[in-house]
Amino acid sequence: MKKINWKVRFKNRAWVVALIAALFLVAQTVLGVFGINWDYTALFNQLVTVVGAVFMLVGLVIDPTTAGTPDSERVMNYEEPRKDEE
Image (cartoon, rainbow, N blue to C red; front, side):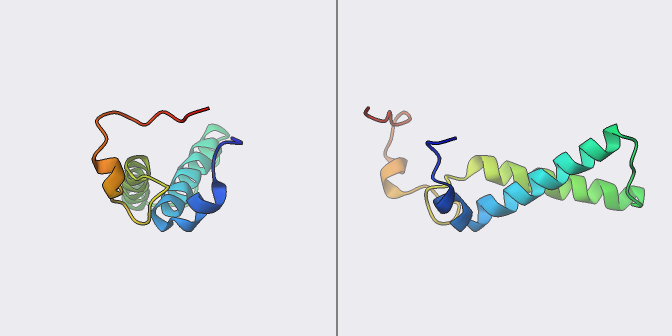
């Protein structure tokens, strides 16, 4: 966790939205384990799950070190992930 630039990640809107969706789904699951059900209709519950899953998928695809969702020109030329020099 020390090698993560949290300032940069929180400046990336797509990553923040994905984080919020992930936290919402985790909270919903934990409450379900304890038998606490929110007063949702079945359709609303499914809609929230689908929207959250889409946001999480976008969060997995984006590069949090670039603005927006596309990769930088430099990264587009990589043939394999870059290894950090120690």
